[in-house]
Length: 128
Image 1 (tube, one colour):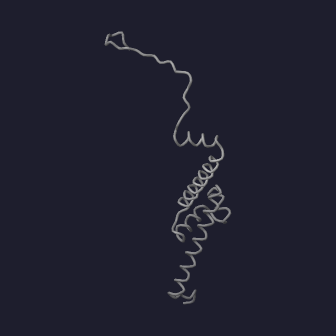
Image 2: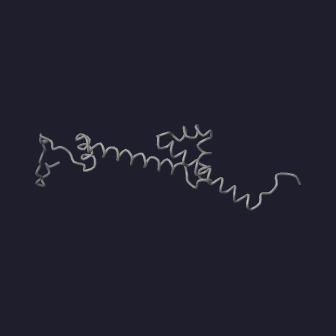
Image 3: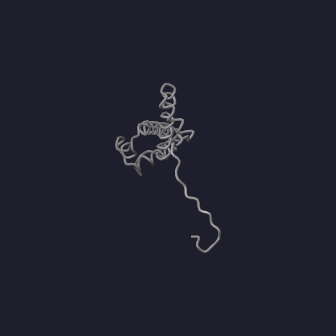
């Protein structure tokens, strides 16, 4: 029976290591593109494959899903933005005030009191 020769155990191990490295490289590329707010479709297009194929390759070779990589990149992007905002707040009072309100949930007091209706119920049938 003719066909492709069987791989030896050593060749199989080398191929497994090669695929893991390719998977890690692919995951790095995807994470880098995702950190630049690139959509899943655009990432897949740039790598000449479908989103489903990209997710399958990542799961198989890098042991991580496309969703996990996208969430990881989003978290890193948010953390970087927060770091930059707090660094800017040290130099700019307006940014510091904004962040103070955002994180401490403080609000400026209103100068005008809102009118409020007070009704005393005495239990008679006239009460609504």
